[in-house]
Image: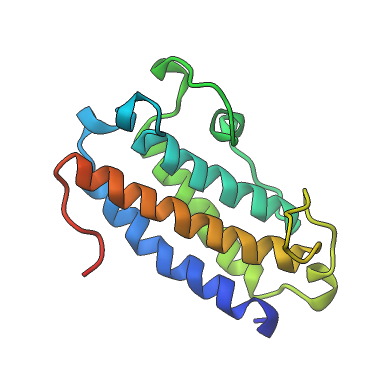
Length: 160
């Protein structure tokens, strides 16, 4: 593995079991509840994490997508529940793209990492290396949201 991505890849590896533990604990009745009617629901956050991983895979040249990616983009309006994929569909996609990313991470070159990111992130190196590093931080932020939302609904701690 390219040494430039060891840390962010390690952080993705830390996230994997925590996300799956949260998904396995959440109650169906709690999936679409939005904290204070303004925050994101557990379902949306998990879909967003998964869709973001697909975006990273695409940026790294992996031909992978899911039909529902746009439902989980930053800033989108909430739509009727019936338009969203099921939790099991998102989980299957999460497992699929996580495995595909792990394989791609093994072959990433310095030239790949110098590539243009899909969008610029203020304060972050304007390259795929910077984008990858930012997304590991971004995912940690959302994993914390999953943990918090789960606890609000009476779930167990995810860590510790």
